[in-house]
Image 1 (tube, rainbow, N blue to C red):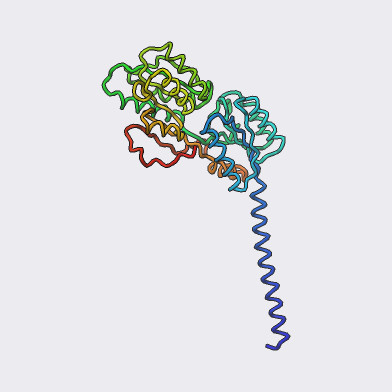
Image 2 (spheres, helix red, strand yellow; image 1 turned 90 degrees about the vertical axis):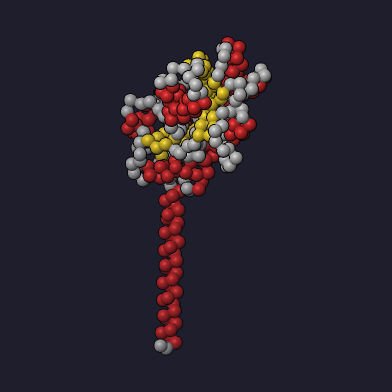
Length: 326
């Protein structure tokens, strides 16, 4: 091969390599651009607890890692704020809407607006009641009924002798699916055990301050309390504060069952101030992003998906529980 042919061959080879490299670069850019085109509008109910803050952080971090543009709105515990946020997402023409419904009812109109705009909706954490389930694509979150059942099963194990057991229930936000589900599952299991009776039940709205105030009231009005079933750890911590003020030993004088598994509740369990902690897993961000991608591509998803959860109690080896992160 003479020098001219060699130079010509090298020149063509260089052009080919440049073309291939630029093609790969364009392909990577197109893939990245395609990922960035997905816009998710997310309405969170608030920041009322360590659990909720962890849930929000999980969603925000997962969106960033998935290259999904996230429009995040905090409803500050008001349904009207959520509806305004969902309507703004529709106007913005996001690809997918996801939200945590503060209560179960009152969503049909806004869901119809999303459907008419061609925007799929994912429900997470709390379930809704609707006249037409086709108004939303699916639900992902915890199994509230099972959480209630787990609490009741622990009590059956704790009180095996058949003697009367008087229970005070501090429930969550009225009309919310976790409050409804936990109450239903709890009662379902205890229905076959007449020795257990719920002598008082009131909503603490999932707030520590309300748990504290309610427990002060309960200690004045209700006698012979054997058990507190609290629908979340925030309220439980307030309940413990109120009991200690009255010289009552939480976890010993009164058995406490709580839901969420925040670090503070696990620490209280290790100290013997709580007897059973039922996990409600807040780290749903990665799963939500995966489902959002499928919905944005027009794919169908499962109507109902529950996340994995554990139960921790005084009967377990608690020495190796990893940090909760919330």
